[in-house]
Length: 212
Image (cartoon, rainbow, N blue to C red; front, side, top):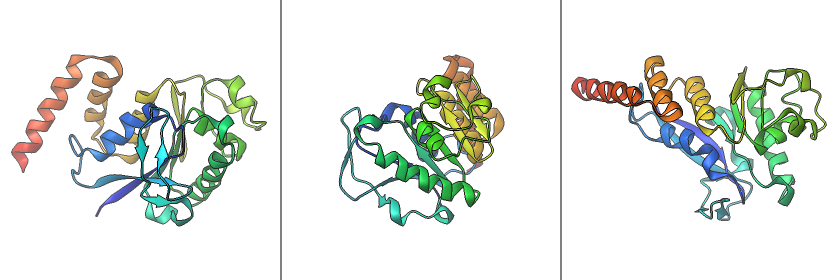
């Protein structure tokens, strides 16, 4: 059975913040169950979206049609929120639906600000670009801020905009896409530039091929 992760897209969304996560969800290599996962994009409307890097995306579905029961996770990248404050707020309201239904949400950079404004970070461990940054949201969760690249607090993952690899690691762990030793090797390679990670992944790939 195919499992779908939904990623929010909006004009000026920070494409580099989510690239590690979406690529390794969508790519079957090293997966515990290859062929199980896919990523779909969701936007406010059906019109093409342009990322901060200038890439144009045609959304797979519109936000009003997204239901938590049809999704394994909702990912919220950052964006230039000062240009469009209403769109992240709409996605944060959808994120509340997800959390209420027990479906995880992952947000990075400006996405965390939207969750803070929605009150989703008031009572759980979380992080963002900085404590001072989130304080501007007026939220009540400052005492739960953790100075770390990425944090999982129940069904909510948050990360600093400068930590896309750590963000991806938390997402991949929460979705249980990789076996634990594979995820450890993945982070060695992509997070620490440690070639030992590559050799572990290569060995695992060969084992998977032999078992097919």
